Length: 521
Image (tube, rainbow, N blue to C red; front, side):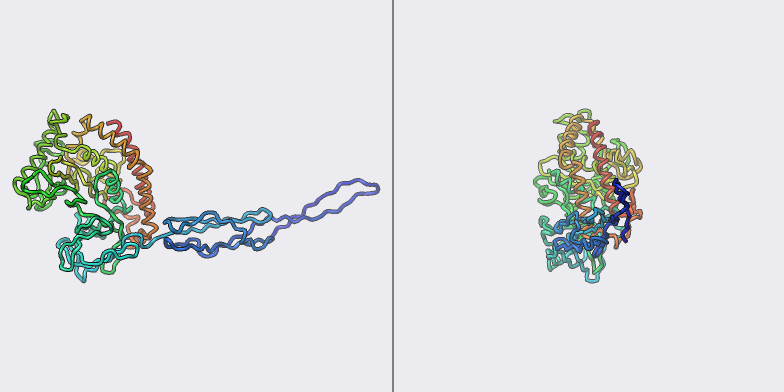
């Protein structure tokens, strides 16, 4: 209802015989128009779909229908995933401004990620042996694989999770291994569906593997996927390449009897069962503190070739090579470029491996899932990196959550842990030449691959894609774990956005600490 004010306008005048007393009445409009939103205030559309704005209706007590005068601020790009806000404003002829209204438009893509459907034909997936199953994989609504696979549960402690990870092979109609280029990856037969569970950002492994590849160090290629097994949705997964010798994976030569210098893939990992025996592994000359008399010496496991495929001569060679490296590293002449440790190792690969594990403060770093490889006639190289789901502040033990400690000093934080970091890293940092090379490499990377803007943009892009594909919603409806502690979470966010914000803030603080820490080595 309009409010009318009576305003007295007094005319003062002088004339012979009297004065005037007329008082004209003026009406002032002080009531703003009203905006009414047509349709919902939050609208979701598929990427590429035409957005038709339902708009608003505007009415004014004096001016009547002002809908045609409404101004809309903001715009929607239906081809780009994201959240867009439209703001509606209008004013009347008297200058009264209506209370603005907003509409949020979310552009999503339900088929953004690989859509995978697996049918086990009534069989149960177990931890060995692989069982026959059928798999259909779709990308952008097009079928890119429709055939047999052999599938099994994989992992160690992760097998206790409600959300399992799987190893699988692409098989032909006869159940034989068959190379196939899944998701435009180089063709191979061995693959992994990794199911992020305790990592509620869903992206820690994907992030570090991408950074490694951009640094020029091969790490498994990744592709976000959504997996359904026997008609039951099982959440967000990551399609990954299995670690193995291959020209497009770990590119080392096939080991032959006539040249025993390579290639080998060796790993430091948890030792259980047969892996403890000398037929399947060999020991360091030293424990994690560099003591030759220590009882907890580092174990090196044969990854490629399989232990049973190695001859005694080949085992003797690679064991001797490692022992020679360690002895050179422990010697008083360890910094000598000719006869010291540099005779045995590819220093740049060690530096990049160090940077990636320290950047993420990987609580398992250097001591579990730690791979190395040696090609024919070449030096020992570190990598590829593997398994960072407990990195980036996602562990509540042994200082795994901190941004201002060195990960390689794990033995000091948890001296009773059975899986120890080799003494190598502390000793390497005693060499001024190694430190200088590390500082130069860190400075170089901070100017490009590891700049704050580039790393944080990756986090933002992954989270946006996961959110605006509705994959996050489907995943956490299936596994209602947001706001709940899952071993070994340090931070527990109530929403997915809180989990991503924690990761983003943690990375920023870590990089800034490393700037100072590396400069002061």
